Length: 214
Image 1 (spheres, rainbow, N blue to C red):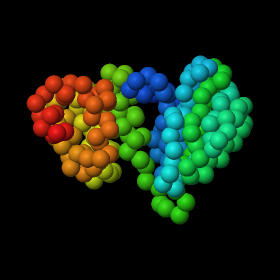
Image 2: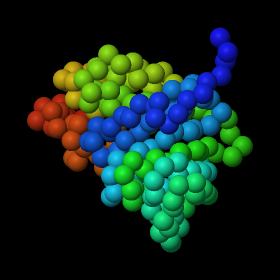
Image 3: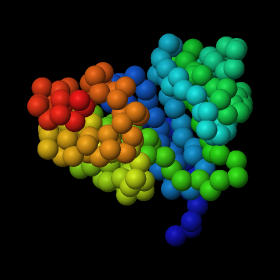
Image 4: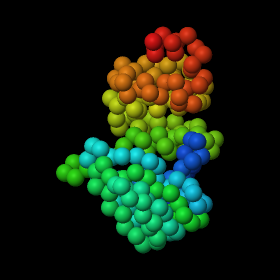
């Protein structure tokens, strides 16, 4: 074993999000990279969301590199067109999102918190899990869910996402157990999603849903 790897961005898988609006090439998982978060996001056509709208108020610093195509970044109070080979540095709390302006736009995303040892976030595992499920591979999807829960066993987000996963595959009893755990850990964090998350649709008509949510 050489211990190193050389690959092209075209060698990476493209995994659609559960709603089909985002496309991730999971570079960090592909090469087993551990020092910090690093992935590639894809906008297949102009107008596609490349990087989701989000803020990083808790200290995550991000660097984006346009590998192919052109993207419009919303950062701070500005919107900037970034062609290939552009670097976009986003200190904590400044990044707002990016949209593709050309076909097959690809952006490398790097992020971590200064001074802290990096640990992969559960969002990545669950994104991959729901993408596999969308493609019909429940076994691979469930492996990603179990990986996320094992890495962050006390996180309410993991329990909530696991509830969504089990609801989607029809394991209603398991879904309620995970939902109960998520509510016990952080009711305030879960409540905004209870009435709107489409993954929970199969649970809302069950009497247990009303019992849990009040």
